[in-house]
Amino acid sequence: MKHILATGAAAALALSVAAQASATTLEPDPNPVDATTQHQRDVADGKYDPEYLEHKAEKEAEEGRLGLSGSTGEAIAVQKVWQDGKLYFKAAGSTPVSTKAASNNLCAYGQVCLYYNSGCPTANFPRTGMSAQIPDYAGYKFNNGSGLAGYGQPVKNNAACIMNGYEGQPSFGVFYNSNYKGDRGWFAAGEGRDLPSYLKNNNASGRF
Image (tube, rainbow, N blue to C red; front, side, top):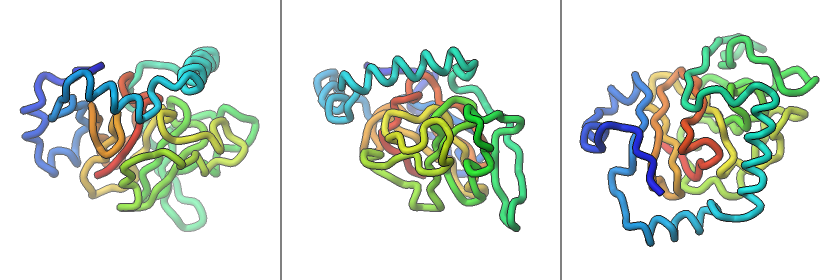
């Protein structure tokens, strides 16, 4: 199933790297495939696994109860903080969904961080520089923010928010399918944002 959120793929493809660095872009797949091929991709990426669908429904219901569901794709106010002589990014005014302080879920300068919950208040998956380029998130877990919601959970098809602390670089792309295929969103450097509805809990790969 396709999720067309831009006026045209041609216009999106015409964006230069410089333009990508300054704005977030929601882009449909520039190389759409037939329904059968798309279904095969989705099956391979676990989009129809019963356990995944059950977890997704429970997670979205929990976000609603906690007031975290908000508008998908919404920009997050980013605050820069210094800690132990290093620059970090965090969601301004964020309150952790845990009694544990959220000081251990910051996103360091030079990192791209995917977060378990909307609003970026919970456990995250940080990657530094080009190591953030991952063709398949299978096997990776939210490993930063011990004690916070989502810690230890799988990253694939399970992220709701992104923080891009890799300032001065092109935007970071999150893809619906593995191997950088399917609809995608490009998230500007220095920005925090909830993933749009078609990528929320549907992230399979990511790259610059």
